[in-house]
Amino acid sequence: AYDVLSVLNSFVLEAKVFAETSPSSEAFNLFCALASIPFITCGWSGVLHEAETHLRLYLAFLLANLGLDTGMVLLSLFHASCSQLPGSGAGSAYACGTLRIFNFSYLSLWLFIS
Image: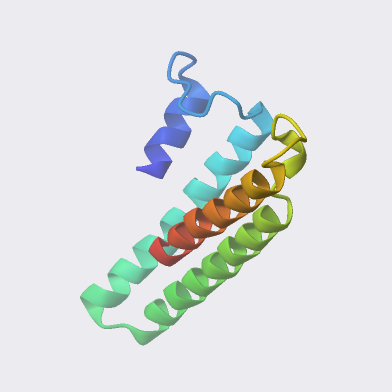
């Protein structure tokens, strides 16, 4: 699904699914999506033909993907911008804390799913 969205987003101008991203970011996402296809195919052939080498390569790909996802989650958590919240009066600390808790929960859920 991500591959299809990236291709549509890059080549079909009317299909702006991620409207706020730059063209270079779209190209990088498309490259990552297309680069994952050989690893997925390798894992699938490892299951079909019971080839341990193929499954180990797919496992390495999954662990690298998990490492990158974890790094991006930690980077996103450290850059949760409370400065972009409106106002600095009463309740701003509560709003900032709520934003950080929600951000942590949301990103942890995505990390758990991936």
